[in-house]
Image (cartoon, rainbow, N blue to C red; front, top):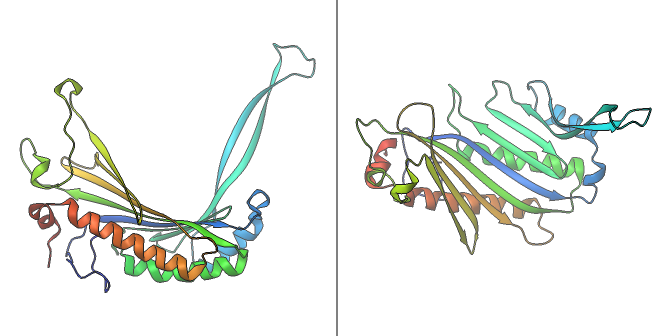
Length: 256
């Protein structure tokens, strides 16, 4: 989440660690139980164009029912499917728009041609929110969450002291043995922020930072308030990102 923005002039980096950004909006329409998946498919077909084929994510439930004879030993399997969400990737799969009952999610991912930035995500969110509002007429936006995933790679030989790079850490008793990761959560008056720091299997001394900022919106919040809330989530995460690393840690990203 290390790119610079007009609102936050702190640091910019030549090699930011961000690999994915996701904005998630929970709406209220009053008809989530009767969600129109045909309308959702038409929405994705219209707003993500040109794009990849529309994908349908489903949950499958398997039940064992007594057979026709009614004997307990004779049971038949019954399958039922439930659609959870639909999604469509943009051409090149740099962005993914997802629609679920009363929910809109936009993911921007790192590719060989782009590093995800908030300045890229924000105008897309504004447009898709407008399109969603026109198509589904939600009463209000109930909550917003903004998620960043950073892969921090540290070139180091021998045992690594995380305190050289990170200002957040956790100390465990020796009886715990080796600890692969830990999570840190905090609640602030302006919203919730959770942080997960964990080792990855990408290569030695690569750490994944998974950040999420979440805000519950005031009643009757619309598109304008949702956009302002998203910007506030961004500022919350930027402040936590900046405080997370030591000067040596910031140096990993080639600050300008």
